Amino acid sequence: MEGGPLDPTSDRPEVRTARPGELPLLAAVEEAADGLFATLGMGPFPEASQIDHLTGAVLVLVAGDPPVGFASVGILDGAAHLRQLAVLPAQGGRGLGTALVEAVAGWGRTHGLPAVTLTTFRDVPWNGPFYRSLGFRPLEKPGPELAAVRAQEIAVGEDAMGPRLAMWLEL
Image (cartoon, rainbow, N blue to C red; front, top):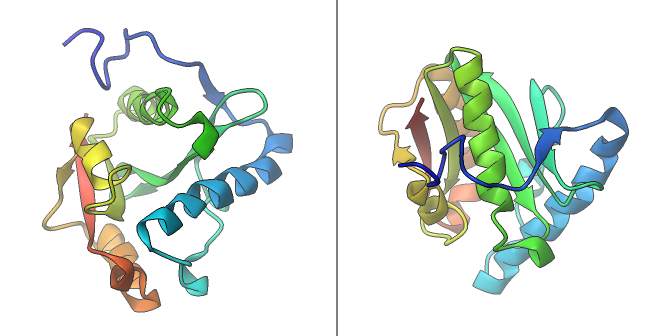
């Protein structure tokens, strides 16, 4: 549907590849975005789960100049994997998260990848329901690399904060 979620022709905020000097700023964006979980009585996140989502990323996209949101992307099981999506809470509700996810999907299509995968909290409104609204579906049998990510999330206690799941979007 033209103009809808994940439609590359839709009007959306500008998203671009992060410049090397911007990477340190993204930690503050992630920290502020993680603070929203406290409004649901969740957190703090287990220290072992606080990994640097930028290390080893094959792509980091940002929205804004300076960045007010970012998406970190890797490759797992031959698919683009959204490692982290974060938007400053003050910028929420403006389509930045959607624009970043659309850009990740576009990058995946351009690179001939079959899907975008991610792991997320199933019921947190800006997690599972948000991704479902963009066309992501639960992935019952993840590949070995994504299964290892889920196993690590369970091992460090993330699932104790709320139900988590793996999701995928066919490209």
